[in-house]
Image 1: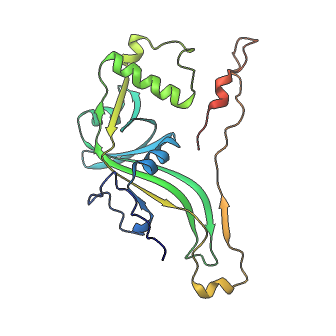
Image 2: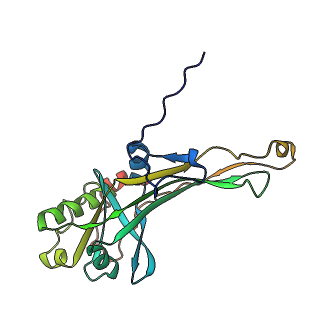
Image 3: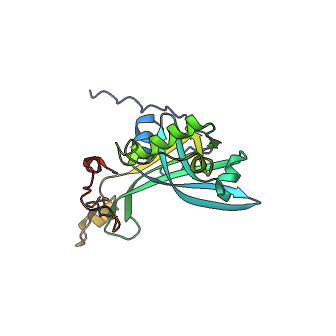
Length: 225
C-alpha cells in the first residue's frame, strides 16, 4: 500500500485575504516556495489607495530575511503615502510558459506568483538605510557595492526605503502540460508548452567609459531566474 504524502507545510497560514479559492490546489503557503519566487524576481507591483483612488506602482524590490524592500525618491507620492502606514498589496509574478491546449478554453500559461498584504514601514537611520541599499546592490550585482562610489548624505536624505514584513502571504503556481477535456485528446491539433525564460545579455559599455576599463568579473554572477 502506497504511503500518503504528508500535506505541504503552511509557514504562512491562509487568511481570508490570502486563501486561494480559484484552483486552490495551486496554492503554496510554505516559506521555501514563497521566498524562491521572490528571490527569482526584480520587479514587483505595489497596490495602495490615495483618497479613494486605487493605484498599482511597479518598482524594483529585494528580499532580506522575512522582509521585502523597495526604494525611491523621498518626494515620491507613493512612498510618502506608504510612509503614513496605509495598507498595501505586494505582488510578484513570473511567466514560465505558454500552455497551448487543444481548445482555447483550456489554454493557459505556466506561472509563479506571490501576493502579500500588510503595512509597509520606512527604514530609518543612516546605518540601516545604507545596509538595505547595500543588500539591494548585492542582490543584483554581487561585489559592486564595494567598487562604486558610496552614497552621499544628501543622496541618502533624498532616498526613502520601505519594507514589508512577510506575514500574510501566499504563492500560486501553475506548471506542466495542458489539461484538456478527455475527448479532445483525440483531436488532430498540436498541444504542449512553449517555455518562456529571461536571458541576460553581455554588458554594453557606457559611451563615456574611460578607455581600458573592462567589464568586471562579477557581472558574470548576475542572475535573474
